[in-house]
Length: 348
Image (cartoon, rainbow, N blue to C red; front, side, top):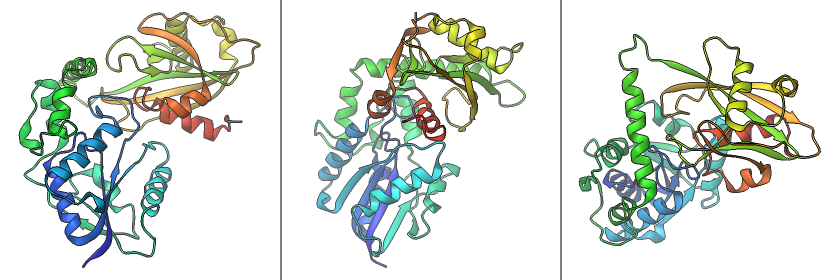
């Protein structure tokens, strides 16, 4: 059957010949192809190291290099919606329908490798076409070598010498400070997971975070250490065995920001608590966090002083965080802020 349009969803971290195999197949069965780039606006990590713009350039350059007519290709970015599955589906659907009529025949193509491929069945109005995995290639293995062994495995990559092609772009990327930071992050994560490998059960870690709002600002700390060096985050950390969750929130808040409000006064500003448990929210492993929402009513923003593993502590305007900092916050903290602002109607 010939379709009007095919849809191919992936993170392309980075683009490799396995992806190219799927694209070539999609173009055989459809007149045009929409490539949906997921996790488009995340902060860099060893799982999502490359920006959307870099990935877009890699894909287009490599497709041109192998002779594909890119007038048949449309590339669209899609955000992560960890705590709003329908939000993600709606964004994908609307992004596709911006380029094709809903009455046209649409096929979604991809390889169902594991539970992470569930999204292939999320669009019942589109025909699902399973594509075999090409030579067992997957980007996770590539990144393990890239960050863990400092090895650029060119067998994964399209033979393209253009500077904006994947191979040459990655050679340039290796020369950047960000690459070294992510190599350090990789080593830290591997060491951390190794320390727990002999546990009788896979560990589940419990952390606390404090989302503090004051005069349309949110309190964030900039991390000093890996993972997430230089990224922004809520004040927070692991819960001690002998403390209640709210006490863990207040302790971490004091330790990292030295906020100029006494703990007993601060505890009275706790408006709500939420649990955030997206299974892959942290690269360390299974980490479930309890977040406290604190709202302060003061004439001026309380003074802060970065301490502990915080490089800096700042009050940042909520509008700036939402509009400009999706790629600056660690793990799922941006998604949490967006969720909390919507649920508690805090955007007015």
